[in-house]
Length: 323
Ligand SMILES: Cc1cc2nc3c(=O)[nH]c(=O)nc-3n(C[C@H](O)[C@H](O)[C@H](O)COP(=O)(O)O)c2cc1C
Ligand SMILES: Nc1ncnc2c1ncn2[C@@H]1O[C@H](COP(=O)(O)OP(=O)(O)OP(=O)(O)O)[C@@H](O)[C@H]1O
Image (cartoon, helix red, strand yellow):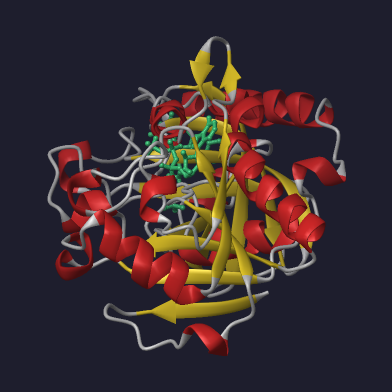
């Protein structure tokens, strides 16, 4: 897949690109609704015998437009998003730098410069896609703005449990710690990446050494508590039990920053400074303040057993992206 970053105003000449079928959207998470849109574009490109492309934006428009519900945190980092789109078999990914001046484009200007100008012959987007200043362009107005230079497919609403699958819904589930329901919406478990950093080194003294993870990119982190996870270290997936929180047994939570640490099961290598990936599988409990270290140790032992029990029920198949 070829990645093309565009800054507004872009200077690409239409004839420098092959004709394309273009899927439009922000696509945070590349969830099952997004996958339907992207796969429809790929199928249409095959039917027409031309290339497929996805256009996304960075950063999220809500941040640039300073909306009251703005969120810098995302389900997929821009790199993860590109990987998920590439897995679907798309030929081109356009990443448009979303700036205030880009947001000012009128719907017709957006269509002229970013669809026709990039050699779009067919556009695929969801029923609720909007474009141009204040989101005034819709799938109803697109045929008018197309100047008969391209055709379009509108993808119908993809629904689960009577609700539209959306990035907003998935963000809420993650924030609530409802991570075991995510495959129904995302099509896979939630994954985040981080670097292993030095912690307070207390873990090994209590019999549960942990890898302290500092998250890279602006991932949304699940609510504080204990989780069963898989963790990928230098190419292999291991079972783990994770605590995200403020370790109230040892600290006044208002004085420390949030920590994410994983006790990796049957593992004793030193992995400081390595990049790891966490696959969040199931929430086990809330974080607690214990009266003694012995009580904490006994509880972590139970957490570990619960995590192993749960992780053994998860089929490590390719669909869940254990690759
Ligand atoms: C599975 C698991 C569950 C944990 N649960 C709690 C908890 O409920 N309350 C708490 O204060 N600390 C909890 N911790 C954090 C431990 O206190 C922490 O691992 C220990 O203090 C080591 O910290 P360090 O890595 O910074 O040295 C948990 C850790 C793990 C691995
Ligand atoms: N459930 C869905 N069914 C069909 N199309 C969808 C669905 N969700 C999103 N789309 C389409 O996918 C593209 C990307 O949409 P967008 O990034 O706005 O996703 P979203 O999940 O609706 O996000 P948000 O929750 O932030 O509004 C758009 O063309 C949109 O219309």
